[in-house]
Length: 400
Ligand SMILES: Cc1cc2nc3c(=O)[nH]c(=O)nc-3n(C[C@H](O)[C@H](O)[C@H](O)COP(=O)(O)OP(=O)(O)OC[C@H]3O[C@@H](n4cnc5c(N)ncnc54)[C@H](O)[C@@H]3O)c2cc1C
Image (cartoon, rainbow, N blue to C red):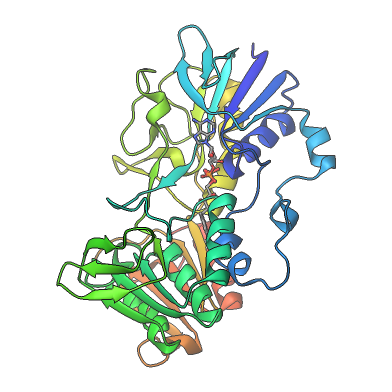
């Protein structure tokens, strides 16, 4: 019998799990603990329109808010914001908070997300990472006040979106990527090349295959020194070299941690009454022996209902089987990807010309043994949505 459920992490995945609990009839005490002082808000706009918006910045959450007073009344949760959970003791059913309080709880939803990786020597004014609204506010203020030259370190999705936003602000932008080509693990080489070409098509330099040796500057950053000796002058540097799941507070809890909280296919951990959702959760992939941890909006939102059902049932009665999906907006283009591609899948271009004119838009279907496994689109939302739906119905359907 669950009398109290504590959700740790007051963002997208935690909110959806809390809603899932209420939707499925849980009427006990619901506590939501969040390290940030804000109610849940949407992160995707932070690297996009939030940076480029004109006019006076909004002091509140504005359009980013994921809840409104009506939702909050329905949720009927106790919000403990601006405080970090620093301990989970499943044996005594306790979540410890950094301010010394202890919450007694029957169920726990771990939704602590991910935090940016940093480079050594990055605690210099003018150097930014981007995960939170407060990060985005600081970056936006500096881009407006002082910046002319921006160096973005890392050409993953966040780095590429920040570069695109800075270019839209009229700034001189260089993106540095240590790998020979960005996004190859996600998209495969040919499609990664097509997406990378968007930078040059919009006047942004992309330097691949070289790492960063150090950052230059004493009072604030003045440049980025590359491993090959080149120095790129910079007024602002944005470090976008990936994230790590936030699991430090779970050390000693008895949970299995390995680049995320290890869960079965239904978000349940090996400890009774403890589930994990969103960017922090590493789920088993049935039939493969493998695991997967997504870092995308849609999985974080969709896992909540499944985790809530399994938590309330006391066992995994429903697996999380949604087709992986993500989008990214760069240089006015919407990139969308859905499915499960594996290395070695072939790519068939169904529309457009990805090699010559990626910015003009294209639709690509990944295939294994002539069976579609995934779909990628640049500015082709309608056919993309149709193929995504077909893929979701079953991998054995031929998509044409
Ligand atoms: C700038 C940006 C742009 C993005 N754009 C896209 C996009 O275009 N498309 C897409 O698919 N995805 C995008 N994403 C990814 C998407 O936003 C994430 O997948 C999603 O936010 C994950 O939700 P989450 O709730 O699991 O984690 P998070 O949103 O990271 O939330 C975790 C919360 O837990 C809190 N927390 C951490 N530790 C503790 C603790 N010990 N105690 C209490 N609270 C704690 C954190 O402060 C945070 O508020 C973007 C992300 C960012 C940052």
